[in-house]
Structure formats: C-alpha cells, structure tokens
Amino acid sequence: MIEIDRLLAWGATYKKLSANETIFSEGQSCSYYYQLVSGNVRWVNIDEDGKECIHSIVEQGESFGELPLFDDGPYAATAISDTKSVVIRLYKPIFLDLIKENYEIQFAFTRLLAKRVRFKLSIIKSFGSHCPETRIANLLNYLKSENKNFCNDCNQLKLTRQQIADMTGLRVETVIRTMRHMHDKGELTIAKGKVFFTDMIEVILI
Image (tube, rainbow, N blue to C red; front, side, top):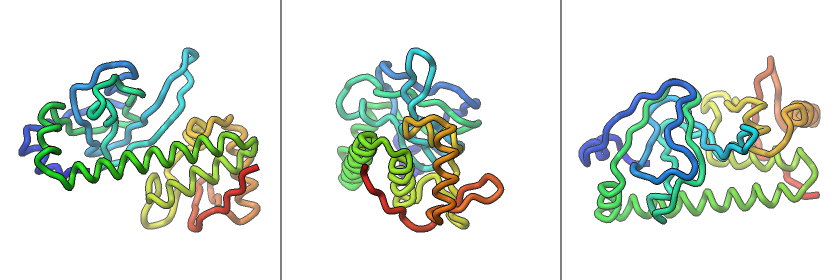
C-alpha cells in the first residue's frame, strides 16, 4: 500500500513475529498502522468455541486492520501470523498526518475499503445460497480478479482447503468434495493435491 522507504521516513519500525503470534485482537484499541513485509497473516473472527472465520489471508505488501485508523473504534477482527513474518508499523497519529499530506495515499485507502466492502457484500449474498459450489466459486473469482493468494507464474491457489472452509462457512469435508466436483466439471484443476485456476467461474445463485 505505502512504500516502505516512505513509512521509514515517517518513523515506522519493523516488528518480527513468530508463527501463530497474535498481532492484535478483536475489541482492542488501535495504536498503529500495519503493513506486511514478509510472511502471511490471517485476519479472523474467533467464536467462543475457538472456530475461526477467516476474512482474509494478508500477503506481502498489503495493509490490514485499517478500520480503527479511520473510525476510532476497536479492532473488528484479530490478526494472527500464519508463519514467521515481519510487519512494519507506524504510530496512528503519525499515520493520519501522513495521509493528510499525501492525497494519493488517502484516495488509495478509500478505494481499498470500498473494494473490501463490495467483496463482503458479495460473500454475504452467496451465503444466502445453500449451494457450496456458489460460495467457493464466488471466493475464487474474487481472489483471481485481485491476483490475491495465487502464485503469479502458475495460477496455483495458495489457500488450504481448511482456509477455504473458514472463509466460506463450510465444512472442510464439503470443500474437498465440492472442489473435486468442480475439477470434474473442468472449472478448476487439482493435481497432486494442488489447485490451479485460470478462468473465472460462472456463479449461479440458487
């Protein structure tokens, strides 16, 4: 989102994370702007039974947990490092000064938040369908359109079946069975357990 050199010039600092380390928790107050430098971070809500609802798997260069920067509310979800990771963070008041002085960054965040709201509305709409293929196709189409969670050189999806289940509200067994059916229909390719996806999948809401 923001060039690292620019963040450093404004006083940002790096923070190393261990695998499965919580960066911030739902309900906590916000003190920093966060941007991922390396590794992976999952942005989730966790219910009382410990089950995760994954909103996003954050990739290198992406920011996360931005809502409290703009509305002064608490974090709406929890951020956890999937692997050993490095983030760069900037103190919230300084971040706000940065975007006030750089209109193009402010505009980029407006587009980003609008895009995420549009995606969540699409996901909510697909939840009205009892067809698991619709939910999965809707998610994959979005990720493909954003070139997110895919290997750029081979069109391989980088999400696990469990992560797809946690992002669509389905059981992992349902995801495995449904994606095998989608493979048989030619909508995606499964080879040696890896999923490859090139073209957009037609989504029919049932």
